[in-house]
Image 1 (spheres, rainbow, N blue to C red):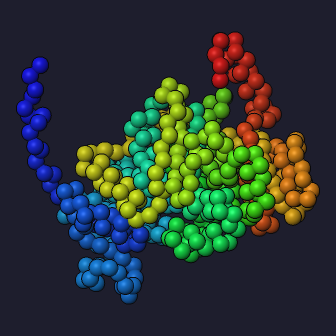
Image 2: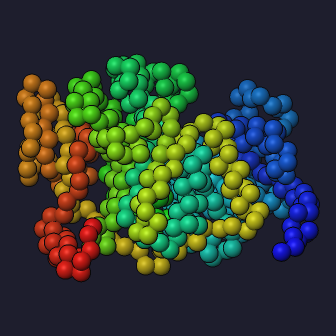
Image 3: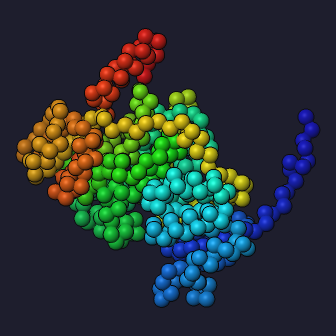
Length: 428
């Protein structure tokens, strides 16, 4: 078969796109640096807006301006990139841009998690486009993978390590015998953790990311507070030793799971992870995501989850996608599942406050060690959601040790579904 010469001919260079960059912190500088090193990308940062005129920056002061609203009406800009750390200000800017039908790229997961449904509606109403790969897992293309490759295929579950800061701390504690405080201080020194680490260590950051993943994996729009988030602020060497005695590691894992009755649950907690899991080897500041699809089977994505260049590369990928006319489809939102919380979860709880054990009302206890102050057993997921702030306040540490199981009517429905599958000759 003759070769079509047109396919081998060099393509004309893409016309350069002008970027309005709002924010010049870690991600903004990372993107700028990438574009300076990669001029063939045909993107140029035409205008840069920052908040503080007195802050010392690596570029001449004349390259910065201070009124973000001025970029919204600049029609010479092909795209706006919003990478500031103020969720409320970011929301106002993104809303204003989408109402003008603009193309926007953002990395602000807290803002997106709080307002995703509204932003999706704005795009549909005004013709703008919003992409946000950089908001979840840094360099890992998990949002695009869910939207473009699994937009129609049902997913059994998605599990992932979505926060590099807490993962680095846990790695140092597990491998080096370091206590929580020194491990966190080292993460801050290396730039893997913020000066105020509460969003990362308290699992608020991965909770926001789990909300975004739920929309793309299942078409389910959740409020952040609906997702259980338990952090590692209260972790100790006792907990690391407990995991090691079982040949496992403690990781902060986001879990989205479709139940047999079709409902979906979402939670972010420390979890025991064994060598059989792809997440077992995801250490340091890396992130990892495991997708289990009905037909494609298991897929594993791993990469750097934070940092200027990894996250900047995700912004660049979104810019390239916008130039090709790409937009998220949100195909699964047409028939979203119901969110399920009427479940029980097996946990390890270590606490110096016995009243917390009574408060959680364990339905079943399989292990108890008074000398180390921990108990293992099943508690209601709803109890953990209700009392998570109190647990954090009293320094309790909780690890998910086993599977979720339905209770009440949900358990009866699950038994019926399992019976139907067995009758049909299928295994689950």
